[in-house]
Image 1 (cartoon, helix red, strand yellow):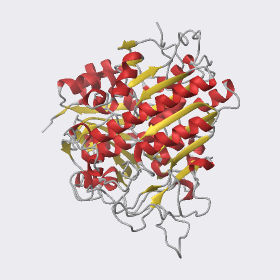
Image 2: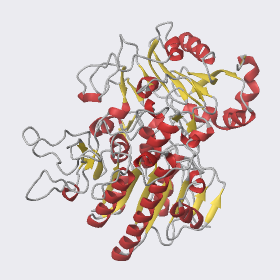
Image 3: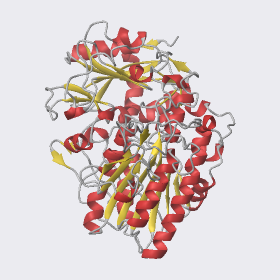
Length: 589
């Protein structure tokens, strides 16, 4: 049992963390960007491996990743530098150069302080279910639109497109935003073909191993090109390559096994499957990206592959390290197979990039990264029942509810998210929790947000299982105050002293939580492979830049994810015109 230390004993730690505080408003690097390259890149492709830990490149068979890492600029100590360490945050951080507190939303949960969605002042929303229009509405810094990578590329490379593609709608829409030209993701599950009721469904996508018609997914999003939506000219029920089998009952054993049953897979959304004409998963993402690469006039592309993330959530991230037979669909649900298939897709993408450069001239900058790391929930405090993932992550008291679809929602959800684990239920013993989100950190939005009420909730968090430190929002609302700590291991303490305050403060916004509890390493409340918090393993990400004009360099320089966009702009010879939290790094000696 970890013992709490009094706040008075934290003076030394607080002094150490004070040096890590970041500015309350976006700022560019005082010394200015690196000198403009002699031969700037003409295009940029960001390839993001969702939930990829840096060590996977060596642990698994990923020769393409290792080749680029070894021949480009590798920031070996890169980390996110912000909470929440999640997909719904990272894709906009990467394309804006901003920390969450400056970009409009700070986490999976959003308090609508300005009533942007018209559901009431301070109504709670789950951001993963927001639409593109919803994200565009909140992509503001104090009501002022901020430029993103697509805006800079449009200005510098007129008449070219910025394209985003991936499985997850929120990954694609957050990166696309208002100024992205094309954003392609997998649709929701569509009804199976029926000659009478659904004659335009896909009758060439049977359930695996059967002749029975199954549910399917197809390309969806913003300005989806017609060639991705192609069906047979004579028979529209014969669907084209980018339609994939995705029946809810096709779970490849993940609904029957523990811990995958907490958050099981469905069909070929993340698993490639065995139908050679309709492969899903990251293969679908890469093939769609290459088709657009060949058919569109683009200057920027963001390719986000989600299979490692899904498999890591199901099986425990880095703990899922046993050998797998990746020729079977059961094997494909594991981390090793997802990582190795993602690397195969990277090889295909690189071949397409080289062909584009040869055909159109100029050269393309390639960026390899991840949106977050992960940790294994060796110490797990969520429910262990089948399908418990979402109710472990999200808690809305049953009388308050939460809006689960942004501006298009008809009514709050009063039931789905009101069944928390016992530890989280105890958090609301005083009835002051409006909403909480818990993964590898615990965050609470309160009804009574007085200083005293926040301090009391921060004290309560310190007594919860797995908590190392708790914080409450300061009076100005632009940072957090450390309330107290519990004992930490030496490695945990070293990371926390260097980065804890810095990371927590990036959530200081009107829409963000009022109280935060950081957790020990290898600790989770959501699923057995999780992220979201401030631990080193969920903050560390690979960060590789490769292409003409990029030197072979392995550097220990500090690099945070908000630095990605400024670094891309500098490498492309594009002047930055708006302040960012990130700074540009040189890619050549």
